[in-house]
Image 1 (tube, rainbow over the protein chains, first blue to last red):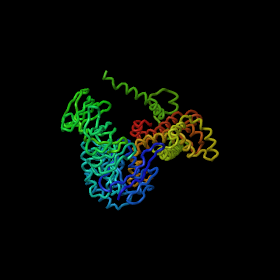
Image 2: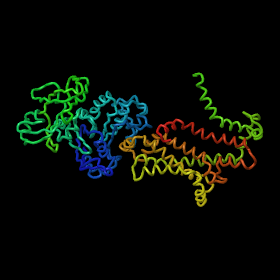
Image 3: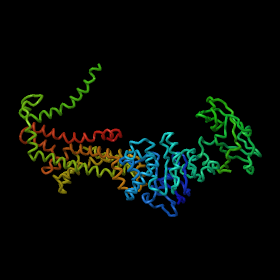
Image 4: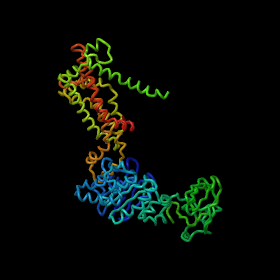
Amino acid sequence: MSLIFKDVVKKVGAETHIYPCSLELAPEGFNILLGTTLSGKTSLMHLMAGLERPTSGEVWFDGADVTGISVQKRNVSMVHQQFINYPNFTVYENIASPLRVTHMDRAEVDKRVREIADLLQLTPMLERRPSQLSGGQQQRTALARALVKDADLVLLDEPLANLDFKLREELRDELPRLFAGRKCTVVYATTEPSEALLLGGHTATLHEGRVTQFGPTAALYRQPGDLLSAQVFSDPPINVATVRKRGARFHLTEQVSWPVPKAQKALSDGSYTIGTRPHLISPVRTSKSAVKIEGDVLITELSGSESVIHFDLGQQTWISQSHGIHPFEVGERVSFYAELAKSMYFDREGKLL
Amino acid sequence: MRRFTWLAPTLYIIFLLLPIYWLLNMSFKTTNEILGTFTLWPQEFTLDNYRKIFTDPTWYNGYFNSIIYVVMNTAISVTAALPAAYAFSRYRFLGDKHLFFWLLTNRMAPPAVFALPFFQLYSAFGLFDTHIAVALAHCLFNIPLAVWILEGFMSSVPRELDETAYVDGYPFWRFFIKIFLPTISAGIGVAAFFCFMFSWVELLLAKTLTSVAAKPIAATMTRTASTSGYELGLLAAAGCLTIIPGAFVIYFVRNYIAKGFALGRV
């Protein structure tokens, strides 16, 4: 039970929305599509659902070619970012609608609707119209409609993005529970790397219509295959710089250098790109191996227990993310301690080394 | 100053209602009183004018004729405009924007321009003096208007609603009738209202395309003025009765029209 893309391309007019994409989704757990707005998450979902046909390439589902099969004939369901429910139906009718289309037995429909409504805590609202519900309840109704028909493929297109913070957390915690024990492939699109990490499963990183990488979420985070995937899968943005390897040391500038880690010993001398996650940089010295770098503070974002400091490091802006509150003034020259040796090293094409 | 805040609206309402009051006033007077003296209310109150309209077939048939072709026109216009508006709001095709704009240009010419060709054409097809002739003629103006209004309402419905319905397994027509149309019912109400109003008040084409069998009320009113002298009381009564259907329809769609204004399409 799985969805396979074989060299799928989607073009609209002269624009390419999806570049050649081959993908085999994990049959269970969450498949997360991670990318910024306009990176092609929704286009990819439309192709998966069958709402759009690929310009070229094939879509296989469960061992059968479904490329030309219309969405109505596939057993899929979808939840959108906006709260989409049928405004002229009650919540009950909304949830029942995918079953009623198939002319299912009335008693069976009723049983299933009540079961799923109970699971999503919608039982008291069954007779109301969607417009009389709160945002969270509207999205629960949409989720219930997606779950009730036992679809083989469930597509969730940023389902939590329009909810407020509290509700988002609540529903996100519920999601894995809702899908536990269901035999369906779940695809979940999000813009937030933290959401991908929380939901686990597998992740595909998207950048401007290209799937840059696909793999188990945690492994992908630790070992992104290339710089682009690392950049997509990092919040705050990953720090990027060009460094020079000379003998046993990497040089960021003449003054800033650190010994070459074991894994990179075999590299020849020359220039490389490093990606350093912001949490490796702190204004407080935490370990001996940290390298001291200096920069002018541009922005300080202080949350309850964490400081995110953007600073100017010669040509580029770097970001430090550290525990504790560090209220630096804008323009202040500050020393940061960066564990640059723990950076990811990429070659000139952006491949991880 | 505050004590006189009621003054301006009151004056305004009096100003607006004066012509209607005067029409109503005249409809209860005899023609002699109307022509002879200036009275603010009927001195000799009479219902003869109304009695004549309700008993004389040349009069009441005028109402029937008007209502028949207006309802026909509204039904045809809205039915034809719904798929067109859906296409404009959901699909992109070559020249769609230009076509959408040029639809409206049909409304830019005065109806008089079309009176002669329509008269000729409908006569040739043997449709002269039928209700359907007037209903079809009015479509020329009403379908573009209805498309324009409905497109606005349809575009305010997110495309994701269509997608959700397809994903749920609805075939297109079932989705369109069971889900989409109820969702834009306000828009259909507003479009129907404007078609009704235009067709109800339009005189020139209706008069040109009919003689006896489908003669509209407005045409009856204009012709009576010249036959047996001036029957002003009778005309006023006919006028009062002509206002009623419009007022009735407005009452039902008043909330929807506000919505239409909010969408900037009315």
